[in-house]
Each structure stands twice: as structure tokens, then as C-alpha cells.
Image 1 (cartoon, rainbow, N blue to C red):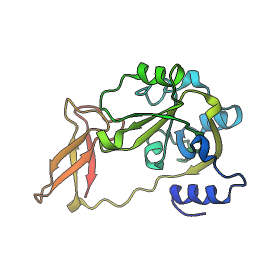
Image 2 (image 1 turned 90 degrees about the vertical axis):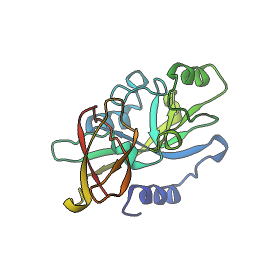
Image 3 (image 1 turned 180 degrees about the vertical axis):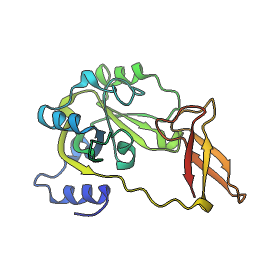
Image 4 (image 1 turned 90 degrees about the horizontal axis):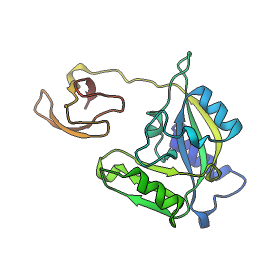
Length: 206
């Protein structure tokens, strides 16, 4: 089907026996998790009571999905052999509640979908933080885990002349965009990686 997760997704969408249902806004999305959780989810569907237990609940207590495998990869955990696991899911988004604000009220997102006229939340962190868009649903019946993708991360060789360590500022959180100056004078815009705490350093290559 392809080499990248996005190419694989596109190939599966084209080959899948039943076409996606555009009338209910059905899409293919990724969900990153651990090996044990992936097997349980695929066998017994999602447990919404555990939603956000590993990744937080910025947009409410729901099932978090992403269109970019890079985003979902942030929430994976390697097994003993170094393999990570992504679920490729068919998700019915219906009418999406759109949010592009940095500060989000998770209860209002839940209310919009559970008691309002919306069926999902589209959190546009790409617009407000420069990271990725997230899709959240609050009903297990809206998500079907079609495939488990097993893979390993392959780190590129680090060019010391084109890399630097950046310290996370005290007022920054994962997803925050920082402007830093490289040793050669180039101004860079970098994003604080998930799991990085204030005072910790992370590697940037440019």
C-alpha cells in the first residue's frame, strides 16, 4: 500500500470493500496506544471510562484521534522489542464542534456533543499552537478499529553542526511554539515535544 502511515491509510481506504460514508462524515483516523491496550481495544472496542488516562483530557473525556500518524505516535509506548502500535480506525464524526482556542473548557466540549447538536469535537491545535488537529468523540459506537499498525521508530543521524539543545521555559507546555536562535544565527521556530517539562532540554535539528 505504501511506506508511510499516510500512504498506507490512503491505500486501505481505496481497497476497502465498503466506501466511507460521506453523509455521516466518516473518515480514517489514527489512535496511538500500547501493545496491550491495542489488543484489548481491537477485541472489545473502546472503554470510554478510561479515555484520556494516558494522554490527558484537553477537550473532554472522550476518544482522541488524529489525521497525522506523527501526532498519534506521541501517545504510543514501545513494547519490550521496541515495537509501537497505532490503530487505524474508521470514525464517524457527524457534525463537528470546532475549537481553535488555546485555552479550552473540556466540559463545554462534552456538553456540545452529549447534550447539544454536535457529534464530535475538532480541536484545531494546528491553527492555535502550530502542532496538529485532534478529533474527539464521546460514543464508542462512532469508532471502529480496523487495523493495528506495528512499527519501530528509526532515528535519523544527528548532525552536530545542525542541531542544538533547547531548554523548555518555565511558562511553556508541550505543543508551545518557541523562537530560538541557532549558533549560526538562524532563527528557528520549534515546538516543545510532548512529555517535556519546564527546565528540561530537548534536541532540535534544522
